[in-house]
Length: 255
Length: 321
Image 1: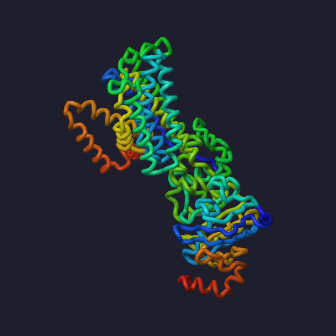
Image 2 (image 1 turned 90 degrees about the vertical axis):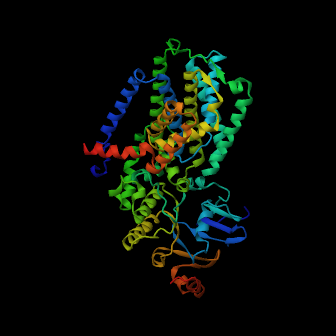
Image 3 (image 1 turned 60 degrees about the vertical axis):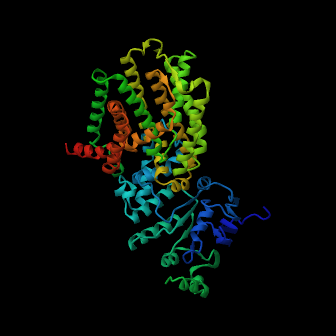
């Protein structure tokens, strides 16, 4: 590389672009996420926020541009490999393993590190050594009493909580949360906010979120996307005073 | 720590254990009341269906080409026993190894696709293997490999005795079901279920899902091969019928009738289909029509298959007791 990505930033993209048959969803985005901060990605519907997430985690292949993670070019790596490097994402629609119990959901994340995931001859009991750690995580998100219930039967807010517990089980260095508060009641929002704040002391969080009070409350930096381009970037105080941003939101029908 | 303790299996397990014990006793006594060849045919197809169910029920992959593993293993076993003079256990192992190798190659290419495309790719491979079975000299085309010697198991158990043959098939069947049960409850099985439930999420947790699917595919192919190998020893015959796509379709039918993703479902389904074919064969071409009607009724009445319906009912009983 001609010039190395800056070490203060855990993620850096250069002219990241994604075209879908002529429709440009993400157009030359240069995003920098500073280590150990909470960075929010906001913007009206169709601004390219989720596409950005999919590009960063390689669930989509970029049309052009580069992605650096910890100064390493990960533009051509596979999704699972990126997850193993410590960048773990959540999904907009809650992603749990519906037929597995809450405890098993978290254990699935823990067991990969145990190195027995291909051992088809080994008893499932061997996974019980992970129970204590799994329960700690489940308690931290406040769903301990549901540990034996199939995850598919949980309420929406609890599924999201489980998803965060599962993500944290991987001890990720970098979390990408796609609308973590979507569909949550006020109480759950409060608890999840606290959790994200706690988690972010040792990690970096990049999140897409529509709840602007949550964004204002949590994030150190906000990047506003509109039609695939960066419209503005800065702390909430600056962003909220930016006329272009206000216009973009009003124009798209957001309050 | 006490509140964290995970309760040991609940009492509902006891009736289930009793049921398994009763079924086992029934299976041991069965050849004295029922024609052993019919029972062995049922067990071979039950194992075939259980192998297929490992893939459909626990990984969510619908293979429409499993006959290639079933049929080709039966050819290899028949050939090894007849032409090379292999003992039955070695001939069967040769068949299983062939099926596993075939599974590795076809699976490696097929698992890159999912849903209907996966089914079509497996069907295409299976049709290719059917063509090979017609053309290759060792399979003897339309005639198949006939007069396969059953031989002596481990050198001293004469399998020409139909009771000995039956108990051997039963032992292999029970061991295989236990093995499948172990697979689906193992750490590997947990990952498989996770992939089945939500593949993108499994990827985002760092799992290279293709490798897990491939291992599951190879295991399923090997077990389907074991079923085919056993069948060729039992019937002393390997024929085109077992590599034909009809056989691939039949195993789908058996598994769906019995209950996808259940332990005993495929066995129930297999015995049902084999029984229909055997006992209604006098009705001639009506067999397929009766089979079709039963299939439609099952799909309409028990969406989750016979075992999928009976399971919860028995569980309720077990807890009531």
